Each structure stands twice: as structure tokens, then as C-alpha cells.
Image 1 (cartoon, rainbow, N blue to C red):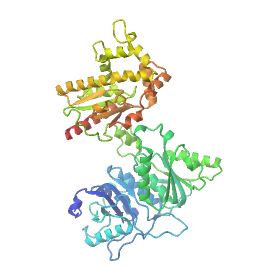
Image 2 (cartoon, rainbow, N blue to C red; image 1 turned 135 degrees about the horizontal axis):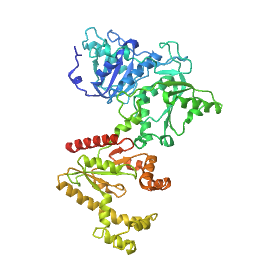
Image 3 (cartoon, rainbow, N blue to C red; image 1 turned 45 degrees about the horizontal axis):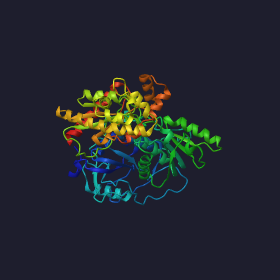
Length: 569
């Protein structure tokens, strides 16, 4: 029998919620999946999780929050929460740690104050079980009182008892799915039992890129916060450490990553001092800060932790206790993605999607949608243009228009001769583009003279081609132009699409295609707009770095999404 949910709760209308888990830890583990499924039906964005095993909501006295010992068992449950959360991509799950404490000789602070949250919960949920599964008002009132005594909630807080919407006896989520090994490992002495309290440290460090904060990041940060008693030093990779990242052009700016990180950390454990600094080398301040006692790493950065300790010994400092967190498996791994939950996989999934909405353009034709396709030399832009043509787009090749413009009967011919002289002509009267190129190469003034002539002419020719395509019944035109942004042609298109590959791959392709030396190929790329500059001004980004069928899949996705946008206008 489903839970008797109030009418408002029947829809996923709540942006933020608080999930209060009251069952014993051992009983919670096999129930996490159905509990999260039930919660995900009600909460659209942020779901805070508060662990209070043994809390009773059925008595007359108002329930109070109490300290929960930080143990390996608790960390394994938190691991299960974040691992299970990946099935609900819309949910930003945050496990709150205010009432979870490590073993510490100093007296524990009281829990009387109300904690402010970045997204005050609109609904409070619980796994607490009433005798017959009914939505008892007294129990719900106790739940609301408990939630508001701990956290800042919305004034019109709604409460929901999830039981029996989930089945605590469901064997499909039983012990067989519980990890056989703990999520936490350390070379330092660990408790002999998963129920024994963990040792805390006054000053703890953790590092990472923290791009598009995901559940593996959250697990790493949660354990670091849990172990820290006073200060958490967070190194955020920047500059040179980002050079080899997959699709680094799609990385969030450092300031954005720090902003999201700060909000998450303060929500989790506001009692800590958070010292967030740019990480510019593999060691960072962890190699030199004498106050640090502990470093939290992942499986793949454990060797880096060992290197940090070697550096500390070289600097005359004591080694840090290393705590290693197991990687979270990617439950929805797609071709060419990593097995683990990772930011690079998230960035790959952004390819072909709309990164930001284009501005309304009433000045452009309403009967045909114009996409400007650009990319550096060697990016694979032309192959993407062919794929779009196969899908039904009218592709306008700006290079071909340039050739037509230079022709003796072309619209730019006479003006170019007047500007650069008749000695740029072949004997047959056609423009010798090699001689013309040599005139403008390295001469900014002469190059500007040429582009001031050519770019407006080609833009006008593009517009003529768009009008022809519209008359033929085409609904999408693609202007294929390497210099789309430099020429200012973004003002004649609805959207800008950019094709990128890493510079090393582009250089390799240019050398193979054009027979250039590495230095010449590199010089050609360095004279053009960078990938990052293009991406920053683009609505859609594609990459031809991988196999052709993966590129085709990206383009097909981008085309489908484009058709949906056009229909919704």
C-alpha cells in the first residue's frame, strides 16, 4: 500500500529537501536504494541527508539531535549514499556532518544551535516507521519540530513519512549489493572494528580539480571534513595542472569551482575553517605546511600522497597520515568514458549539448536557422560539416565563397587589385593568392586592409546563400568558417558551434595533411584564435578526438537537440 502523501507531495514540486535517517546503520545499508528512489520522486534539486540512527519520533517528548560516532561503518554508509545517488542525476545530495564526531579528547560542543543551509529544505522526509505505515500527524509534527530545531527550513515546511513507500525487506537491494570492502583505507592504525570510532585530526588536507562537483568529489570531501576538527586545507588544481585534462576547454573557471566547493563544504560542516587555495604543482601546500597532520586521497592519487610525504621529509617535516577513499564506479558508463565517476566523463557528455542559450535574434531570418561552425586548423571541422550536411543541413563553405570573391568576375576582385596592385595577378588575370598571402603575412596593417575588404563581401555572399537555401525549403544552414568569430560573423548566425581537439592532435593532423614541420604546424595554430577563446563564445562544442562513429554520435545528438529547439520557438 503506497504512503498516504498529501496532494502537494504527489508531484516533484520541492526544490530542496531534508532526509532524516533514523534506522540503525546496519539496517539502513540494504534500504538505501529504495529510500533514495522514494526521495528522488519528491525532491528536484538539493537533498540534504541527516544521520540520526535510533531517533524516535513516536514519543511525546520533542526529539533532540545527538552526536553520532564517526566510524568506518558510518563512512561506508555515506559511500553507499553517494554511490546510489548517481542513479538520480538531478539530485545534488549532501550528507550533513554537524552531529557526526570523530574520537577527540576535547569535550564535544553542544548541538543546540540551528544550522543555516544554502538551500533551506521545503520538505522533510524520513525512513522512520509507524506501526501501520500511516502518515500520523503527531509523528509528522515531531519530524518537523526536529528538522527546524537542527536546520534553517522554509516556513511552510512539509513532512513526509517514506515508509512503506520503500520496502525494507526488498531482497533486490539486500546485502549482495553492499560493498565487500570498506570505502576507507589507511596505512595509519585503523579501528579493529568498523563500529569503533575514528581518530580525528586538527588540520587535514585534500586536493583535486573539483570540476562540476560530482558524487566522488563529495565522498572525498565528506571524509576529509569528517576527519578534520579545526581546519580543512583544500587545494584546487589550476593553470599548468589542467593542461592535460580531457576537454580542458570545458572545465569550469577556477572561481566557479571554488564557489561551488565553498557552498558544499559550509553546508556539510560549518564549524571548520576552510582554507581553499590554488594548486599549482603536484605537492601544493601539503608539502610545506608544518601544521598539517592528515591527507585524504583517492585510489588514483595515493601515489601522489606518498610523494607529498617524501617532500615533507626532505623539508624536515613529519609525514602525514594518509587516508585513501575508493573510487566510485560509473553506473552508466558509456563508450569512451572512464570506469569511475569522473569530471572528464561529465565533460564528454556536454559535447553536442547547448552550453548556454542563444540570444533572441529578431533581425535574422525566421524561416531558416543559421549555425556558424568554426574550429582551428586540424580540428576536424570539415568532417563535422559533412555529417551535418548528411543530416539535412545546407552547408555554406566560406572558403569556397572566398575563392569566388577573388575570381575576375567576383565581388572583391577589383577592390583587392586597387588595394594591393596588379603585380599580385597571374598572367591570365586571376589573383595569385600565394603572392597576396606573402604580402599580408606578418604585416598587421596589410592583413587588416585585406580582411576589411574580404570579410564583409563573404558575409554578404553567405546571406545570399542563406536566402537561396530558404527558398529551397531548407530549415537549417551551417556556415563553415574557420574565421567565423574573428570576422565578426557571429552576428549573422543564431548559434556558434565549435569543433576542438587538443593542440598536440591538431599539430599531428596538420603535419600529416599538409606536409609541414612540427614548428610550422605549431606556428599556424598559434596564429589563430585558441580553442578556449572559441569555446568561451560558443553555444555548442564538439570534438573529433575519438573514433569517427563517436563523432557521428555527437553530431547526431547535437542535430536532434537543435531540431527540438527550433520546434519549441
